[in-house]
Length: 102
Image (tube, one colour):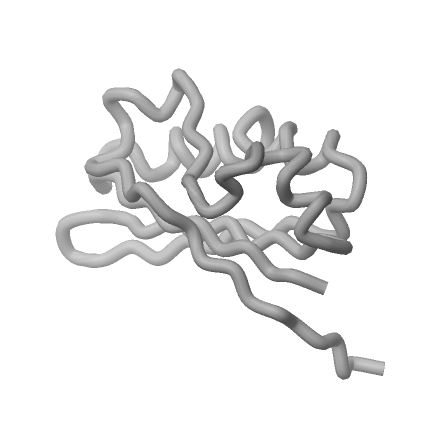
């Protein structure tokens, strides 16, 4: 299993709006991609901004490429991100992951 983690930041004023986007349209691409196992959205408000992370689990690197393309380490952005995100990080992080909850 591979875990893919994306990070973005918004202003505090845009935090609730962006969270609603991530919980719906902003994660549709993940949900619709074969080989996606799970999606979690994390948020943390700080004094001057709100951090967001999407943490997704995938069956394989090939499944991630179905979502992100051949350059799978490159972050995927959407038109709704313009004017909301404070910056556009170029890369995401990938980790081999192991479920030991059972």
